[in-house]
Image 1 (cartoon, rainbow, N blue to C red):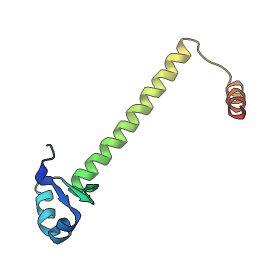
Image 2: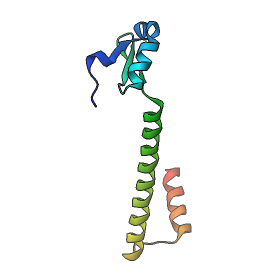
Image 3: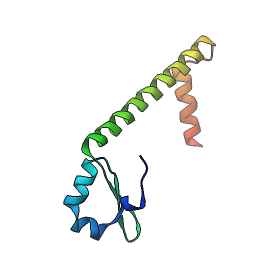
Length: 96
């Protein structure tokens, strides 16, 4: 679902019509509240916000799994070094 111009609401109008906006959001709309002509906040259904957070956590987990797979590929290819050597090299780079 895209955002239409009717979904962009000035802060003053949102304050005056919060109950109506909340009902529209509960029915599936998403609202962008503006302040001084610029995007300020978004008004979305709480269940949708929970869903967005769940997607974000799942994405983070997938990225971690991908990084672990890259590490396993490096080990299988022999691209390894002692941890103490790697730490020393990183510390020397930070000093520069």
